[in-house]
View 1 (tube, rainbow, N blue to C red):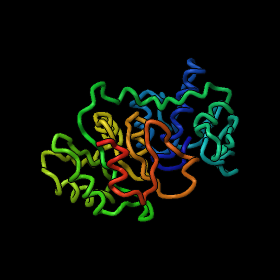
View 2: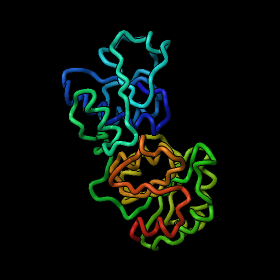
View 3: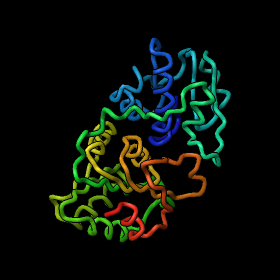
View 4: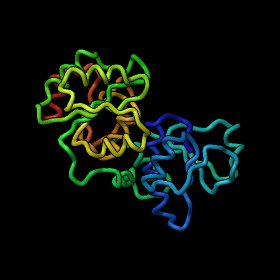
Length: 251
């Protein structure tokens, strides 16, 4: 069950995958945000989606935060809220798995959506839910125009980020850039065709990492340890200049 955004939901996929493997005869049901549930269903992370609460479950896992007492009362099953040590070297997802008595191997389950032979396409994930998470538009332009002509750009976006993505695409040759406002599942499939990403602290960046793309994660705030994406991503501050990002991408 997840009551957060896209990134919050995706960060729970390793727990769901571990539970599937540990209990192959049981069904895993997603209750929460519909688009994340559709992604989990398309990748085989869950068996079905149930946005509504009210069914009894054998186990309810919400790694990122504790449920309110009123929410707990809706579920007949055992509730687990693992305590995370943000300062530990062990990734948060591994901590959750270990506390549940499961192998601490992180598998987001999205490999089926990743292309075996990625295109020479870099995803620029420019939209953010808050101005505090944003990167200057001039820096995005610098990075986009720096990429070699043989490299295409993919700019997944939501309603808030569509205008900026369109301006960045307009700064390069039209045939090199694709702006996509499509379903989360389709965005995952298109991200899976990319060879790398640069993204802000947003759900689509968590998605790019969960797909296994190497890239640069532009983190906005302190405390990233609790949600750090880990390898193969490189976590940078959002104040990192385009030059540092170019070096990190090794382009």
